Image (cartoon, rainbow, N blue to C red; front, side):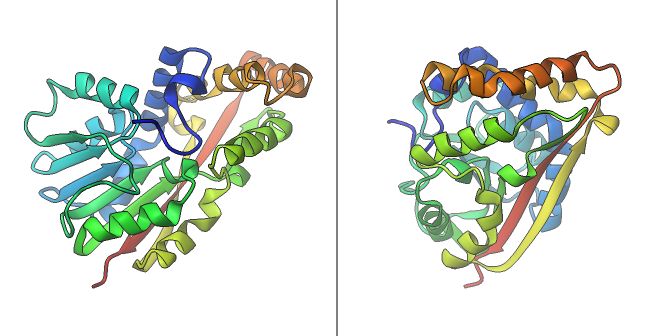
Amino acid sequence: MQPEGSYQASTYNLEFEAEIQRLKAQVLLSWEKESRTLKWFGLADGMKVLEAGSGPGFFTEQLLELLPNSSITALEIDSVLHEKAAAYLQKKAGDRLNHIQASVTDTGLDDHTFDFAIARLLFVHLRDPVAAAREIFRILKPGGKLVIIDSDAELFWLTNPPLSVQIVREKFKQAMASRGGNLSIGQKLCRILQEAGFGSIDLEAVVSHSDLIGIEAFEPLLDSGPILQLVKQGLISESEIESYLVSRQEFLAEGDRSMMSFWLMACGGKNQ
């Protein structure tokens, strides 16, 4: 089964293993605050949980530790990531984890099955995010909740010294849009939930700062592989990314540097 939307792990980065490490760093960077917000939204141990777009299993691993008495269904359409997650979590999950390879818009799961659903950095890549939210609405129990964790291009990074990201950001937006994604999805999360039938909608922001967790936690996210892959695919020219690569090197060489990242967390309830 082929991945849907704008993301395919095996072709997103110049090196596949570098992409896997980038995804791992992305989880660890903000897990403490994300888990705190998930619990504030109502996630509790013992619930039956769906993780939509579960990737290579790093976020799933954190959920298993956070919820030792919960059963978790990890839904992933990308066969490479599906198999990698199954191998990675084989000895860590026991019988509490169910891996399913399917589309989030057509899960094949029964109505009214889950207490809580989480979609982390998935909706940014989907051609039809409302259809995905409606499918999750269907398989949630009455009173169940969906939390979408995602990004927005306008809340990219704040860095000191500044990184020259404007051209790269716009090219990424164009490339993702051509494949069905939307790098500005964060602004639309509440509306997506509303259109899918959810109520009691809320929105929170999760901020990670290098002064609090260390600059080393951010460095895998500065991997230039995804940008160079766009060059390789002819979606951006070397001259267009030159200013970014120069500023990236200057940033990495700076002794006194800092970085902030932002995720948005939107929650909706199935109030029927």
